Figure (cartoon, rainbow, N blue to C red):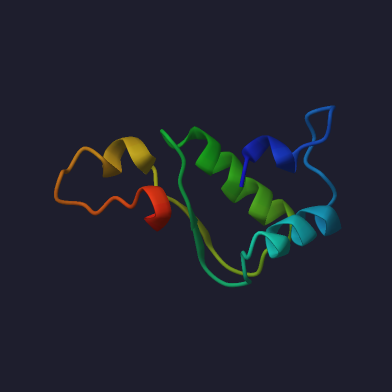
Length: 83
């Protein structure tokens, strides 16, 4: 989910109900969730947006995010039709 979709034009988070609807429409169910992005910054914002939405479950941030994941060639990477 694009991080900037969670904020209004004034930079404030959207209201709780709108955030809940967005997360639900994206297939994010209640319960534990992990977030990641390219380097970890936007993942932290998304975890905070989950908290602001009243999400019922832990929102863990994979701090290393994509930059860390790809540093080990043994880790699987899906691309094309797989991704």
